[in-house]
Length: 351
Image 1: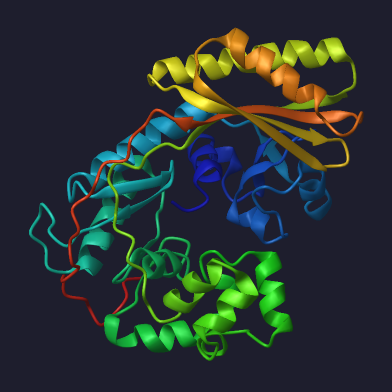
Image 2 (image 1 turned 120 degrees about the vertical axis):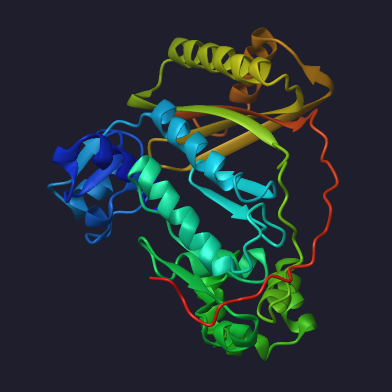
């Protein structure tokens, strides 16, 4: 979806259309989503609200409405399932679809994507972008090329040239730190990355070196998994005013423990590893975990363990965010059927 949260807000409140808006708290916290009008000023998701306001003084902040976003996300997924059951959601606004054998019997992945995007617009009033190719990595990269409201097909015959010309910072798994390291090594595009041997990349980037060696050659064998297994459940709060008082911390930890328990109960999930996350006033981050042999099962256990982890904190500084998360869950991954992608590709892009 294109700037999903922000687009929903502009759709539901026409007075916001054409204006720079950010979904999130104006005084504290971070930007959850920014409209395209705000992005022109350099406002991005995950940016501190204060920084966003400095970049765009007339930025309009809108509080998030996650129940509404989930409602629309459900509608969009129902459209996906009209075409294939092989749908792997990544978030509320993004998913992979394997349309090798689709319910409509359509032979063009390009036309399938175009039809899905049209249906989404008709039923929600929102625009979506799509990427089509032979694997998830290439489809993901392609989906960003003609945003907003467009699509891009990377044909198998053009895959090698596309990857060689792709800037390394566009490769999945290459963040700012890794990109800067690659720049320092004279690696700016895929063709530069391709010149490096597997041994060289593993020496420079550890286990990720194997990934970089493969994807620049178009090798990405991850299948579309329709039942993604949840690996953790988390709750966190950014506070309007920084916390220093120990009693306040206790109250927040207790509240977080209650909320975490409710989320877990709702989905019949249990876990063995509890993690406390602390973000201080200066934005420094601290996390610490405890793993048990048996499963956590009550709000009291989350609070008592969270309290023990709090006592292990390295600093007595003002706190702007607290979070609790549970991992090592009792969910089991289901084996998926591998399908070789054979669907014909169009030689053109729609939009």
